[in-house]
Length: 176
Ligand code: IMP
Ligand code: MG
Image (spheres, rainbow, N blue to C red):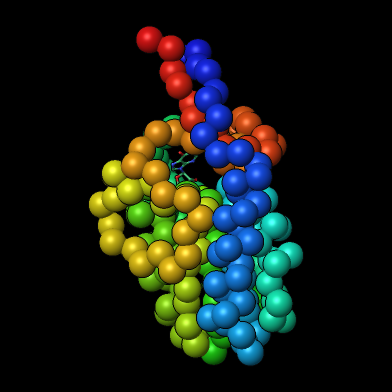
């Protein structure tokens, strides 16, 4: 594997602030609902865990795991579900929680798939909107951080399964 350094981009304190800000908006928008939160594994589990602790309406949580036949650092082509949610979502108010949206391929595919089960509503919450390579339009209702580009790890995000446990978010800088 190519050598690399990690450079801190977002501190744990900044993450905490943004998570609280986004949770407050969700609390406003979804007051009175029974929210069905779907976390996309593995990347979003830490974000989900923090986010739902600030939600004030009744919340159910489930997880889906999606696999794409992509390269190490980019999604391309076919997506499939390798672990599905275990509760029917027909008529439910759904909040999909994703770690980072890059090309948009993964999330757009999944939201399209979910709509076939006729949920009452589907909203999307992303920890990071990485917009430079967006090739598929996907409406992000809640975003904690926006960045143009760069490969990020930590707070759930990985590079080849490494660094998910870091409390802050770091950019991977490859040595020349
Ligand atoms: P997309 O389908 O191109 O939007 O890719 C989204 C998925 O690729 C995310 O759910 C991540 O799993 C992964 N991904 C994209 N960018 C990064 C990154 O900077 N760090 C870690 N994972 C990433
Ligand atoms: Mg992901």
